[in-house]
Image 1 (spheres, rainbow, N blue to C red):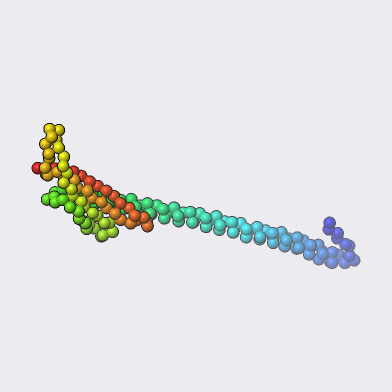
Image 2: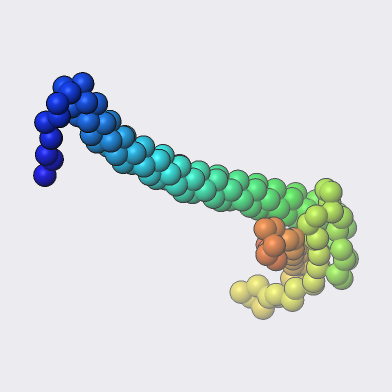
Length: 153
């Protein structure tokens, strides 16, 4: 409850009213400033959460893109090595193949296959070519495998 005392001087009464009004306005402004600060802090927090989520999503997309590129390159190299090996003179055995920048390690194994026809005739010069690729991507060990059987009459 606000009581205004009458004073002999009306000038004094005006000063008291102005002081009370100023105090009331200052407390409202103080509360308002605190509310603005709270809004800014909340907005910055939301912005930071969104920025971290976006950065994480972009990193995952980049990792997936690199992984798909590596697997596609390895598949292409395996196909090329199978065709190249099939066109050469085949000698049974195991060997290491160096291709590209050396990040991917390729092993080639050629085995003679003993197969018979429906009439029971043994097929000579039948070979199985097996290629194994291994590499490290995103801190994990990856591998791919390809094989073909070649008949050389």
